[in-house]
Length: 485
Image: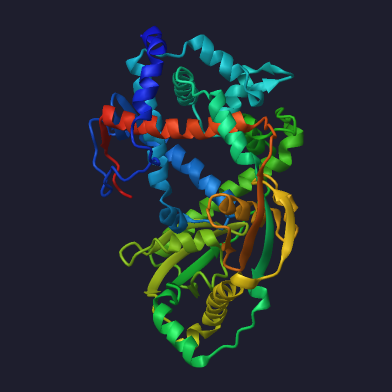
């Protein structure tokens, strides 16, 4: 079957290419409540491939971590929901499952030997340049992964890679020549940069009120949560040697030096005490929680929490926001060196701010919008007779030649310049800058670019991948069991 696929891959590629080019979307599924299919652990089934709950949770966690890194930690479940990362995670797994179905159909498999060779080559499982089985198991254990699930995920990825490798997308000389030609068009420009920094705006109270009337639904108070809480401080005890030795013997793998070696008992004592204190603190916090829930703790503190007024921490606020009058108690949450236990007393709903309440937020937005309108007006009035900088001949790949723009701005400007047909016009760079231009001369250079083939290949590969997925969607049935998005 693999031989047949290789022999007929040209036909298969053509079949996929004639499909309408479109971006991969996720609109073909419906979302709602969770319903279980034939297998309780599956969230979806694509052809003959099940997508398990654990795969979905891992894909979600990976995406969540990526977004959290981009937002430098300022990311929570509400933002995750707004960005639709559950949907993104499921779509990614569906796309992978479509390729795996194609692999099954053409009997493309990964042998145990190929799997072992790949895992052994991963540097984080090596010690002194060689695969270390014990280190492999310990790293997986530390990351809450079992060997079977990890190896199955690696096998799936290798299968996908092997399948796609049978359908290579190659460039031809004519395509590279077209790319070189596009990169060799050079314009000599007269250009002028206009910026909102040069525009002064006086706040008109009447206009400001009109602006508020148009946008007042965007200015709301935060939802606030009135809570009662008690803090369980860190517990610190003295432990006899027998207790510490018993704990050490049961949890040796917790205590390692910088090289990953297990510490001897004497050197691990400080870490042992720290873990025992942590366990004791958590145990005390759970007892406090039960007592609080049973009405046996009266000496509590009250506080009103919101996004703009949060003296605790983001994790506490995020968990408090999920409480309801029916389930008002929050189990112990790490707080400082101990825990905090919370009871929701009431919720203060969000409301639209009055003009005076919103005024401090309105003014900068009003000024920015006003400046944008005046900047556009200025660009239109100056265009027929402007004077400005005259550049050397510049191609789309030479942003550094436009000295009055940053490299990022120049790249954006040149990209738009060479995509339009007008000799004289203006290009909006962003909300704060517009560039007027007049093409004085144009010529075709004769440079050859080494990366033309790579750029063309990347474009073709992206289009091919998108259309491959589209083709496979119509080939394999997709059932969604998880619909809580």
